[in-house]
Image (tube, rainbow, N blue to C red; front, side, top):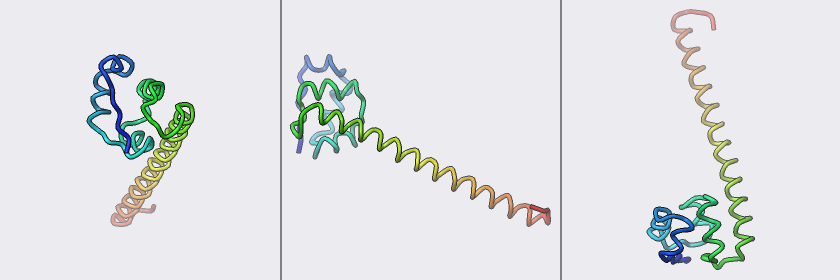
Length: 107
């Protein structure tokens, strides 16, 4: 479990609201858990990594992982939205076909 301690002077780097959210969301099972629950905002991650708040690996490796995580999450979201769009189009096409059939109109 990872616990992040943020002092008053460290708030300046990330802001009071994100700092409070980070502290309130603790503990984090891992850096990946932190990314999943908090997000991948570079304005927050860079100061935390610079302060070495995560002990799992060196800051450069964690930053590379965060970038990979963010890209993977975007690809997953695009695929999910694309799938939802396809289902929406199919569903509405079927509704239109059924309505036309009920009115005895050609499709």
